[in-house]
Length: 344
Picture 1 (cartoon, one colour):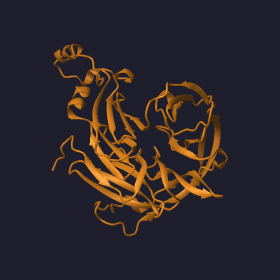
Picture 2 (cartoon, rainbow, N blue to C red):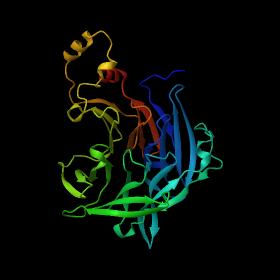
Picture 3 (cartoon, one colour):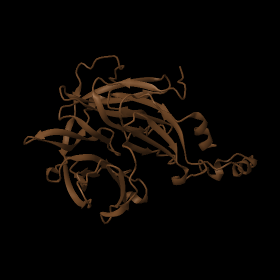
Picture 4 (cartoon, one colour):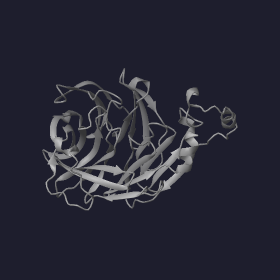
């Protein structure tokens, strides 16, 4: 059965969760990784495979016994390698630490279960190395160099930006440079994104309600944008069509916006001359099209708790996942009408 394009698919985890990532190095299968937050039980990473032909979710479960997972991110070069930020108690205070892990070889052997099956003997992650930055405080998130070889990472800890080099098959991590966010009050990073453009030299960070840009060549602060109202937990732009912007927020909504003003293709997909049909009149019709305007395309309300993470699929640019704190993962698609308007 072929799925309805606009029908959401919902998967429920048995634990609370706020950590979600697409498996960055996987470009064929639609796959997401979700990390749980449980104080009483061993925490888990759920490997979520979405079969869009049959509208079915399959899962595998890995144990993450280091602690509650606050952030998760997949290597751009190796499907089996990932980072987590997790909390642990050290000298009677709770710290959020970060580490690089490898999935066991069995995870990709086809031992998927349907979501209703119990996980009898989940495998455990192999620790590759800690990103040991206890001197800089708790880690908010870890970012891999986009389109990189899986050797460079950034961690955001309190008000520090730390650039790491992974060495010896990712079993050692060394800080290569640092920068500090200056300003009044107790400034702390909440999240960030390493831009894939400009030769991966630009970084955007958020500290509560302010967005700030950084130049990684000089580790210098490039200034901040105006503070935003409300608490937006996650912002992701589409990898293939950067006018499509997803946000997840504390009001339990996911909003898909069409931000033409920041798009590199403001009037839809740019087509090579070779790809055009012999019918050249189509070009003239396109020139007469009304330009698209910045707008909210759709508001998704399948969640009942704060939406802490939204992520685009790497394998399918028209599909995305969202995760709320109650452990509900929802898979949705860009509305068909807008998809065709961008493409045609």
